[in-house]
Length: 100
Image (cartoon, rainbow, N blue to C red; front, side):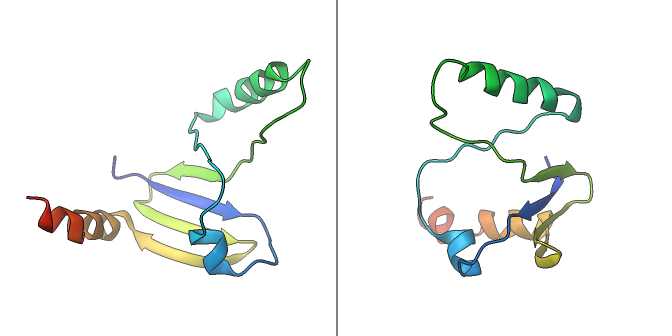
């Protein structure tokens, strides 16, 4: 889409490389418009009304039209990349070069 995102990671005592790149349990990223956030939260709560919650949800950030990926941990900007640069890196990955 060429859009960007502002992501705010929660504070953690773990090393930054572990937070960003370590493997872990399955995760799902859901994007919804601002006017649907409350509806999504209500759905989540109603889904577990009679059961214990087996997963949690967290708001990590927002899609922006700034054409940049900005990732913060607390107030520290840790990643500031142009979407164009990220697309170029992805398109020029080794896999794409050898799978032709």
